[in-house]
Length: 386
Image 1 (cartoon, rainbow, N blue to C red):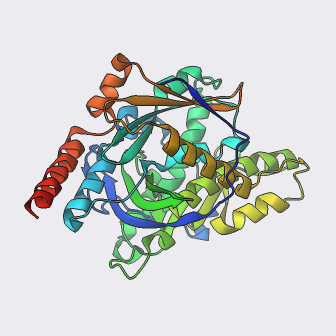
Image 2: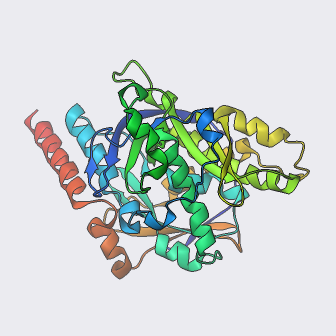
Image 3: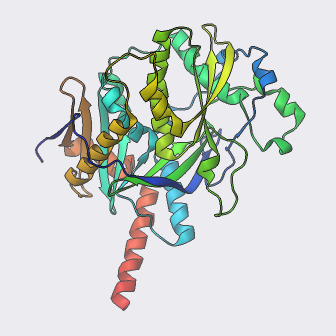
């Protein structure tokens, strides 16, 4: 297969996004195990009286328990949850693309965040394109320097904010001792609750897996309610004291909008910290209002303001291109990359020795393959018996 390219200037005529709908969820425990339940779902709780105490979001940094990157990028739990859903419902999910929300966020925001290269690996199996970021290659080609200790502390402050702004159960079920101990709790980014949603754009059906920081009030226990309506994204940012900082925050808010929009999360809560990582204020944003905020911000005089509709037109175009251009061959693997110099997406077939590990469970686990192949065999037998 010869290399194929797609310019960043491309746009689709439609921005019709299929309303995200949760089809299942799963948790990643502190031990790194994946379980098909809501055991790691957190609940928002941060009264104004707590914010007024000037919480130190850098406290406990030395005791931070950080997730192994291989575990963080693994499709294992994601596919395990899909398999469980299919077994319970005796039905195969319908999707052209299966991937993590973070990968599609990077594609969606690319028109306004095109300074760094991107590298994705794609394999086709049983009717789906599975897309995974090749993080080592992306990191090796990034212009961003390795994080310094102050940068690591700043990144930690986001996890600390999540820790102090949530409780592990609905408030009525949480003890006073648990609430009071939140500031001293050892922070980790290993435990995780993830939602798996069915969505898409244009004619392309997409299944996304993405972390959910917490629930605002409760998660509906039956199919009559939409869990997505209750989810909350938690973020931190530097306090805004001047116009330049407001413009910088716009870019961060745009990425947050993309994250939430793709998964169907309606509410974002930002904790604003000073230079010493002290929490100074908390603000809530409605995700559906962010595009208007970005478009009408009077502080930003840039003639090319961030336009969420424009980003969606690009997203629709590149997703359609991927589905139409990647061959549907289960014995091949492909590399999708973005070159910031040429402003083009590039698609090439990976050499057999490079593709080998991706095809042998590197993206699609052997367990999931076995599950799907068994379904294929059962369907074939049922068809021949008729």
